[in-house]
Image (cartoon, rainbow, N blue to C red; front, side, top):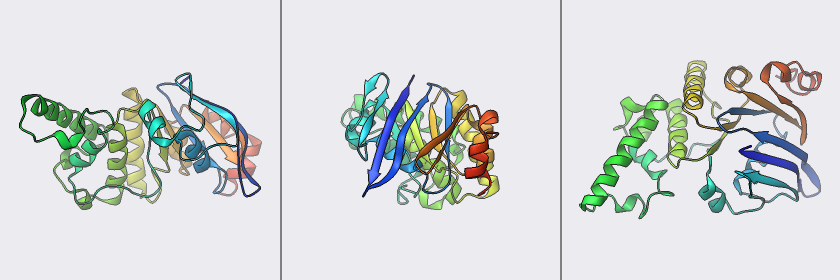
Length: 251
């Protein structure tokens, strides 16, 4: 099992945000995390990625306990993440944005590029080709020379995913990647995420677009008021009475 969350508890000022949450993510799959606003979804991502510490429970990644590790150590171990708000560099080109995501695994960092040394030139060429391949997965190859500020909002969301993938994470946490997208943009994103799954990436995504999650996810977990209501294949979860009452009716 790639990610294993066991009995996680998190409180804020006496209010229980997560109550003994346990779930798993298998390697090479897409897992959806759904639930109403305030259900505890982003809080769980904060705990997995190392932004916050749980009050109790255990989080294991690749059979190594990562509970409470700082975010840079969790990232180094292979957990990538995007956020609800855009964090692209508008004054850099699309491919340059992707290259910045490689800094965690390139010796000397991308600042060593352009030094006119044979080994740095070869490394730069290899990194550039890899970045373009990632952009191809996300339908952005044709815009690799554009400035990020020239992209549409939906394209910038995909660019953020591309940059996270550049670090070659074993698991990528996507926090509402379709938020704010039009229907055609959300449909395009769903196709891109399906392509990433076929390429072997492991994705764990928070998403309110139920149709997207049901279409691309291998498994779905649903939270409500800090409790895990259901977990399993999409076709089964969407029929769960507790899920219908707590989530679908509200939608």
